[in-house]
Image 1: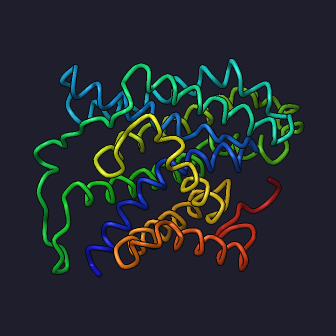
Image 2 (image 1 turned 90 degrees about the vertical axis):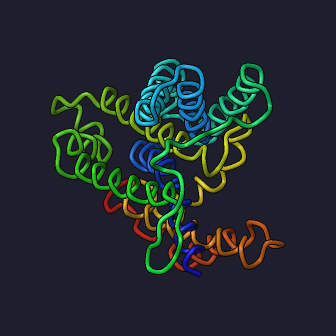
Image 3 (image 1 turned 135 degrees about the vertical axis):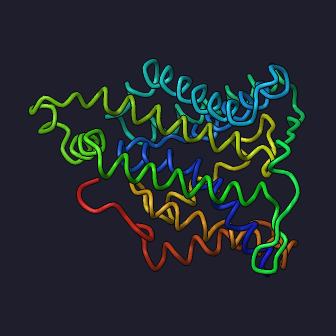
Length: 286
């Protein structure tokens, strides 16, 4: 049971790192971005190529993954997404899912249909004993890294001028702009930040989730479940939801392998029946 719990939490951390950016764009900016997994894939490929072909160390590859995904998100936000912020959510869905299919086709053409190799650094190999359970060092690193990112994001959005401006622009964009806030620029940086987080999660997930051109479609539902169950527009909500989804998914595959992802879907339905707005919904106007 202990190993299932640790593996579930580690998997949940990956879901949170990717889902946190989706929570920002969906809950704070009211933009339904189903292409979020494509930015995670972009970060994963950037990290994989940086380590395999350029020989960059693991830490530098993670930084490159964040920057590459953030830049890709910034470019697409300027060219495509910003024109649909005030459009119907169906337009968001159609555009973003089109971006996903283009990304899948492009990744297949550039890198082939097979998965990318991944070799963690020496200090992340092997395992350690915690509470009588042998846990992989890489999974422990994922847990610690995810907690650190959560604390940084909470501080950024809750204790800085940038976070206050973003919340003000989201709650009432017209009033915020009349007071001199440049909401378009704030949303631009927020969108890029969310994409960068997705890329970081995609890079960290290579060793646990794998990486191939179908990555954006394979895990899209899991990212959406984390945001919907946790509550869009928050960080603690998706974090709690990611932990629960990770544990439920790993436990289901360990104890009921024939059920596949059914336990996760059942968990989502039960939670949303009891709390339709999510575990910890954002307070105030969406």
